[in-house]
Amino acid sequence: MERSKEENKALCDRYPFLIPWNRWSGKRITEAKNGGYWPGNPNEIPEYDYEYTELDDMPDGWQKAFGVQMCEEIRDALIDDDDLDRYRVVQIKEKYGSLCWYDNGVKVNSIVHDIIRRYEHLSARTCVVCGEPATRVTLGWISPFCDECCLNCGNGRSMDIDEYYREDKEENGTDDNGI
Image 1 (spheres, rainbow, N blue to C red):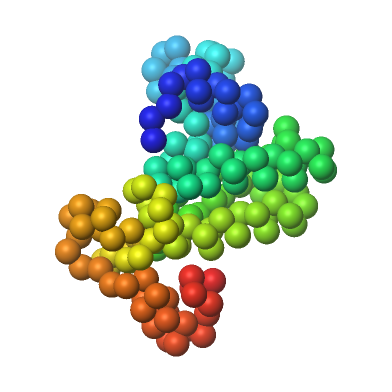
Image 2: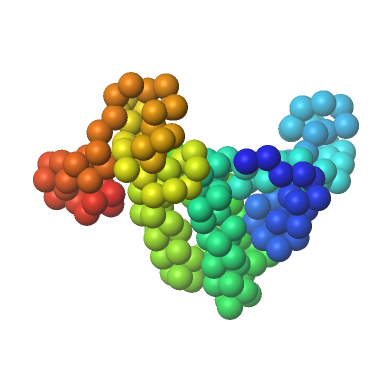
């Protein structure tokens, strides 16, 4: 989902945990003056240009369906405990058809982790392309799709989402999203 630098700046102003950071130095990740992301002198890192946010790694459909809403709920929980400035997103990705949201491990209230888990659960039944309710799961590269997006995904093998999670529950004794 493409956003302008101005839109990204507005997101990062409201949700500072979406600003990319160097995981080793704790400094903002931006293009270094001498090229590359890991300069010998971290003081040479120029000001962040808002070309990218951590939310950009979330599939477009999930961003449309709940990306900002999820960030808002996390923000509210962090503000309640005065943790907004300490919390950082390390990685956002799709894995085995569900959202994976990794943070910096800063001790935050359990509400934040409950919010993340709820959206990880929801993502398994939300189309990764358009954000509509998913009806199919592709096999091989496991991803949830609505009927229309599944036809256009280029993966000929898929199955009904309810059948997919019913089989998973029977095999693994887990709930309908393998959690």
